[in-house]
Image (cartoon, rainbow, N blue to C red):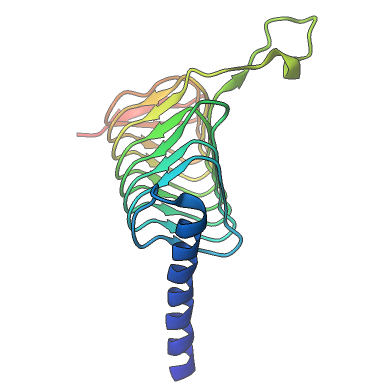
Length: 197
């Protein structure tokens, strides 16, 4: 029992040391204090990481990404902006394991993103039927998720959507249109079924 206690303390200390090394080598002045980094984390590009941030194992963060204070990014999460777009994660927000956030995306403070969510703030252009879709580039309207929003597991949010403050999006929903503040919304396509008071 005593060995396990020391092992857990050693793991926590190792995570803090790893965070300090990453900060020194890769983040320079763009990160706060107490950064904790799990195994196999990839950090590339222009990143800004706040205080008391925890990046679990196998997290991949690329390009223009801002992570504010007290954020937890779960195992196997990928944050990736496209071109000049930016991913912003607000303070006290958690993004749970196996989620992907790409493109122009802003997530507010105190949000809870459950496992397996996909949030894509860009879309392929496909207007020209004589040209390959892949060759037509991307459009970026962006996604805004306001403060205090909760996503159930496996929610998909498509480009051009705004989800209002205090909303709850049910598990497995596909959000194709904006959701007003303090709404409970579910389904594919996601629709408001109730208001929060």
